[in-house]
Image (cartoon, rainbow, N blue to C red; front, top):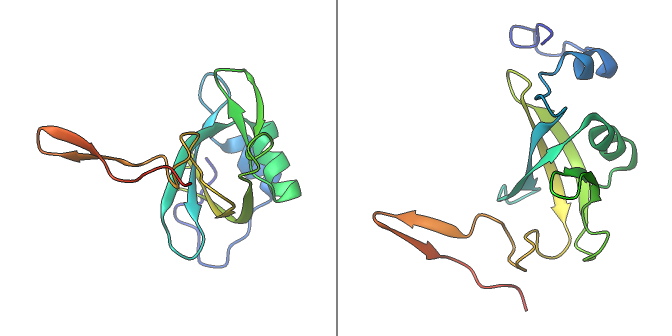
Length: 133
């Protein structure tokens, strides 16, 4: 990774150089966390390859990499539940990207607002939200 950790506030680095330096995993992927703009609610965790990240940055519509289908997954393409990119950030060591989004409709394929609806409570896991009607 480039020396982003110790860089001064206001420092700027060319995007291509930063993307080249990211620690993509052995499948060429990086973890991507979607967070709702305004509320800060964590919506989902997915994966991006470089093509998906570049497309997201270029179009403003979030695109992931589907590990099961082995193809680009444009969030909302089938469901209509789009994610409009508001801001993208990298974590301190560059192994995760935070996508601050405006989510249209539920984020989860179950129809729930967030994929994180299973609460661990002691010896139990309980369901916290219903699917959106």
